[in-house]
Image (cartoon, rainbow, N blue to C red):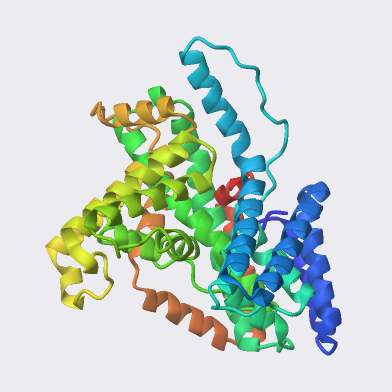
Length: 476
């Protein structure tokens, strides 16, 4: 059920009304939100409901068992069980066929012809997100940073809560469980903020991201030989804009939907293309994933506590696995490797303060800072080529075309360049300006907000492409 469809609008309107009618009976409202979340997931494929329910139930039980265990040995054993089960689920559904393909290729190179053992099975939508969320709950209990949650149905709702179920953000149990345990309180200000975020997210997704995908990006990546260097370069920059508008737009809609239901999610994006190096980029991009990888992978590997060389290895391993988390393809591994190498280089030349967002304000206007931002953006764009490409061959063709220095630009018409320019330039507008717009919207009377949203909906309809483009991160 895509956020940018009338199906979701009808579904959410019904959930909003009924959930607040039930606010006086907390348990009944909780059961309703859980049922609505499972219905939302079943709208994609009801056969995978036992998977999300079973995964959540097992982790809830294992969390309680770890909380009761007295010996470190038993605690570690139970932790190993939950990690093995969660990664096993991911392995079967997401990586089994990938492993089989690599094994067959290796065997073929040695002259063998092994049988094809690939599974004919669909990838459950959102599996990478809800397994990470559920696994972090058990790990936090093992670390004694969290006590086992007593209410089974609150925990099921935490994992399945539909605004973040399919593509995040990856919400930590300590952020969401306390909110689900409380009686909901409707706030007109939070509701107005939610409406503003939903409108902003739809505009990013439909008016900018989808337009660029349909009118340039998909065409160039499908047949790069038909386009010039300038057009291929424009498509790469456009994809950087698209994936930001698409994913941050999804996050805006998810956050706005949750706010309208009385729940607040943590910030997931902070103007990532303003970053002045790759470390700074990962403090701004998909923050819920980058902090998850830091806390549950990089630090357990040793972080920066075991010397410089080990730090570089840990950074590389973390990003390689982060790339693989996105998809079962070597192109994602290369994308992660590029970021891992860049993080290691940043660390080597910048020391422990590399990427710290505390540079003096004056330096942000200097020529050197602007150059760093431009270089970082283009390094990120290089990674996006492999992220978007369906194969190494396609990525190679795109990069070769860019290096060909051909200047024809017949496909870069004025409207396309305007959308690309607005999408890119808006990224560098100070956050204060957006906050001021949001504050002014919140302060409007209800009828004023309704008129603004009506005009917004009309504008999006006029600007949006006629084709429905799925959210990029739904595939993960």
